[in-house]
Image 1 (cartoon, one colour):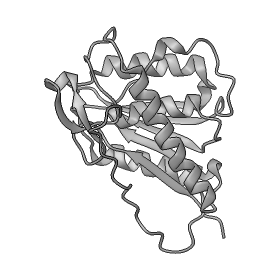
Image 2 (cartoon, one colour):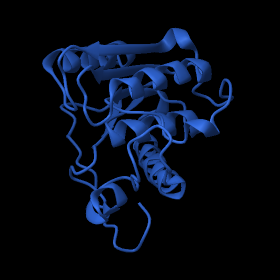
Image 3 (cartoon, helix red, strand yellow):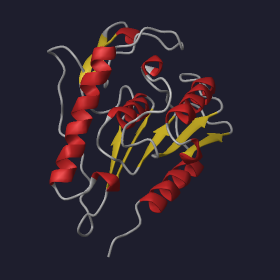
Image 4 (cartoon, one colour):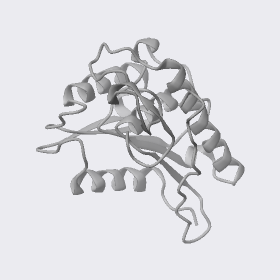
Length: 207
């Protein structure tokens, strides 16, 4: 999300059926609707992307300024929800692919105490910048990480390496890793049911 040609559309908001007491902020993957910028991996073509992706190998260079800028944008969105009356500990952050990666990074760096993170088919950006348990407010955060075992874009190895890293950064008892047989870089019904169960458990209704 760096450069002057980036556009930042308003978030799509699903209206609450009754007074909202919690929120789920879910971030899109590369190429979906959202901010537009050139992506190195796609021959510098402009497309919806939270930050530049330079390569897809574990040792690829990363767009640190872009990742941090995107994180600040989402932290501002969380602040707006808090101003609207939703406590941050009643907010789940989540995303698919690049959006899931950004969600994990935000949860580990924000001073906003979140209810949890759903990280689908993704990885932890700037993982080398995290050493040992985090000292922030989310060291006991609940994380649901999901990955297809046939993912050709973000191989399941990325998911496995990420979950092992996460368990050194936050309370490992609160980190769940679910894999789905035959699933590629996409979603499936069972994954969505697992996400629903995770949300229902962390955000029970308030009368």
